[in-house]
Image (cartoon, rainbow, N blue to C red):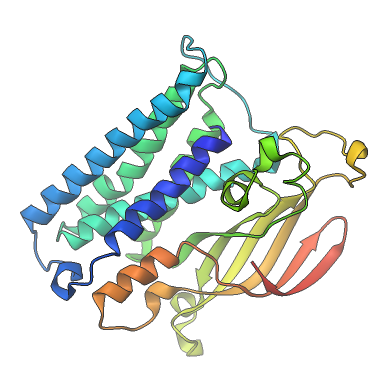
Length: 303
């Protein structure tokens, strides 16, 4: 999937969740104790409508600029140090979580939340991949599809195993020196860079400590986070950076703490929704970076 389309899907997560977060009616935000058909129907109609409108807009704004072709596949597994694949895992996980939480608000039973809620994100992202398959410029990427399945599986698997999310996939970003060198590929402004400059993106597996170590009496909201990133990339392929006087590209690994905002106690269902929205982001904390080139680097507040 192209980076512009990843941007599109990424923004869709925030637009949908932020749109829900505009209402402050306590009763509106309180999940139903039993099946509320009006809410369920509203979620189904809204979700289907948003997905359909999004696909129509994507087709008009993106695919119309490229020639159509017969269905074909594309192997882009080795591009961008797989940072785009981590983006797919993140997107499918968060879209699945959104779908399931929307059905939970409607009072739908847990089993159906897992099947239909989490499946919404995977179905949407798979449809976008199929669009890619009929575009001359792109192609259906099995590695993208696999990353989408993995993200959905991380959500559903935890629900089946623990009936809760003990681990979550999160995102953080910082601006880099590379975007001005290749603005066409890495972004021309902050918003574009957040989604196109993989040098500044970090994807995190954030693990709730209290869920695994109850006897330690740790704060319920305290998480340990393991992150992955990359640096020195001007294009997807392994090009030389000599013309810019840059060192070779390399991977980065991070160890840090985090906060699971969904575990902060509050009686306000509106605040719980706000926390759910913000919880897609890794909270800045002191962080240890490990990489091949610099061995180890300490960041006071990495984001």
